[in-house]
Image (cartoon, rainbow, N blue to C red; front, side, top):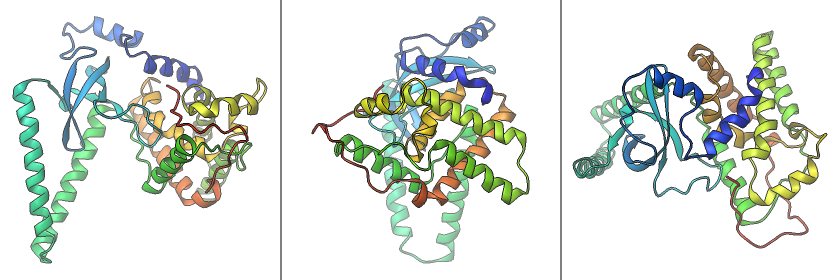
Length: 322
């Protein structure tokens, strides 16, 4: 990650220009492949997500490692409403269908089957029998297998944010966009402090710390410094940023866990553009997931429970910058 500092800005630019064609790397790959993509940019499609089918639109297309990937936006979900969840994602061919009347009927039939299954499951849950427990374990096992297969097929880093931290993101969004409050700066501990605490924690637990791990989290701080002004601020945080971070001030020395957690919502897409080898990506994913667990473990001491009201508060609802 330490060598990918400049890729953050590049990734953001490509992420915000939906009309732009696939990257240079992608164009070169396509040139060596005679097949054209089965879906076009701006095309309306049907996409599966967590076992359900949604209407979506193709935003960008890439050809990597002999496979087509499509960046889709799920229709009906407000893009970047807050950092609670990223509704846009890269998917493989196995999760897309043409938007046709026949496939729409399949979607309706699929939803009906889901409703029927949910009704039967609700009734079955009332019967406390061994057979019921066995079926529940089987469903859970099948679900886990499907989730692992999806991550493998898409070849993307998967960062599942723990539920308590998801709630933290929801509260963060509520404080800033609806109540007009701000995180009081500078934060203690700041991002650099938190990363140092994590490395100390790993060193004590493992007895040593590999140089590669240190480089990963040095790179994480670089990503944060580049990404914060570009994509991690809500609109009404802009003025505060300009005052808190003049040219000679690094954001990771001023901001804390609240803004660092927002980065993890954006990281999967940023890392997708970093051209990292799959084996290295899996190692990176494991380290970042462990770091999220560390944040959750120290949630009470790292995160603010309340935000402050700025003197020049404007009583309006603000949206995050694109």
